[in-house]
Length: 73
Ligand SMILES: [Zn+2]
Image 1 (tube, rainbow, N blue to C red):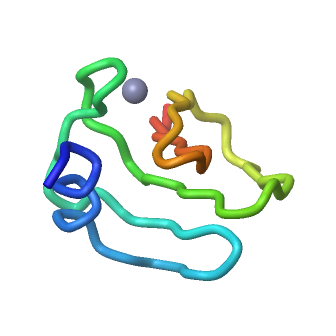
Image 2 (cartoon, rainbow, N blue to C red; image 1 turned 30 degrees about the vertical axis):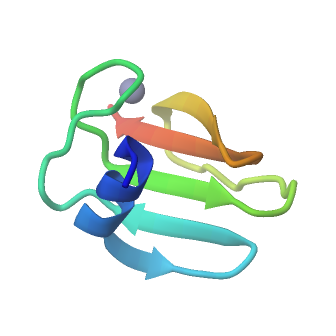
């Protein structure tokens, strides 16, 4: 099991579909910046994400899918 799978299995699924959203309810650190993130977003299609809140985003790629870690301000 790699780091990404560990993160997914520790988070709480909120939405599934073209975009999967997992909420970080356990205070996991973002693998990019080491600060706790709020939501993990896995985009299985290239969709335009409607991110209405102002937030910092760390982007990564896992198995060819864009993966975003959001940090609310
Ligand atoms: Zn981050």
